[in-house]
Length: 402
Image (cartoon, rainbow, N blue to C red; front, side):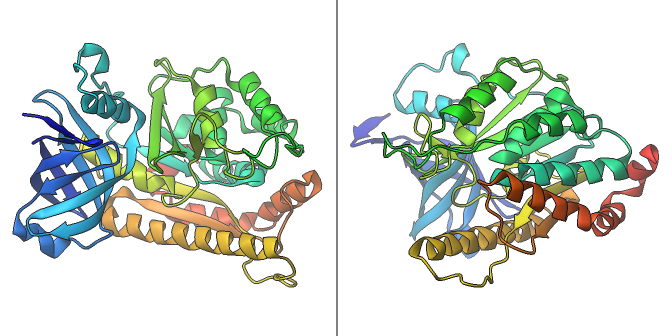
């Protein structure tokens, strides 16, 4: 029986959740758009603390279940309170319908795309902003080592912010040389947004270029593209996945995923997926694949990051703005590196590797000349980067293409 109390409904649902590699069963006490409260056995307490990350599978009916990542926000006797940290877009729509007490008709049922193969190879592309050309250059060096197009080698492309745009372009155009020519014409000098407090710069030109490039989009149906963005109203991270045979609005998703708060504001209540935690898109991807498909083993997975500006800089504290930017960069860097460590600890069978580039100086990403200079630094470490790649790519994959 279901009763209403404020914006929370009292309902008893079966669920399972993962704490690291351990799996437990529980029932809900109540649910809301931002989280739920679970009744658990005392044996689970030794695995939990406030702030623990759980992967939750919630059974809305006998036939319908949803999946989300949650943080533990409080623990009492036989109960834990959860805050939803991340959820798939389809799961969110289904969960919202359930809380509104709508009938879960066939049109609401989740249909996850089929996996392209059992031995998955995944490329993760992190946030980079104006360093998207540098990200592309790293992809070119990777392609040289593999001696096969990235679009033909990897099954999944997972991106956040500029990494999402690059992943989409790899699947659409398949040629990195062509993508480079397009991106060079994609450079934009933002104009001050005098008429609105939504963002410092106008996003009109940026969005027009996204609409032009992605209004018609298709790729091989056996491959998958995964993107992420954050809800500006409730701070929940949303993940979105599509394959070449599905109907999807990639333009709208990409607009959401690059809506940097303060710079470009938000888009339809969504902002850049690189805001806050889960900067590393690999973490949410692996959690989702384990919950939905029960997959924890992969042939090869690689995270490429456009890199960090040096944290220690001369004349750093000349202005308040420079101090604020330093604090943001430091928090972003530490959060990202901690996430990589969590992935390697919790998902040891993913063959997960990561590469971060550190630049020799801080570049102005609103300046086209600086963007090209930051990209050229990637080439200076090409030999080191390709040596790293040759060491980590499994020989049975590497030797097929060399």
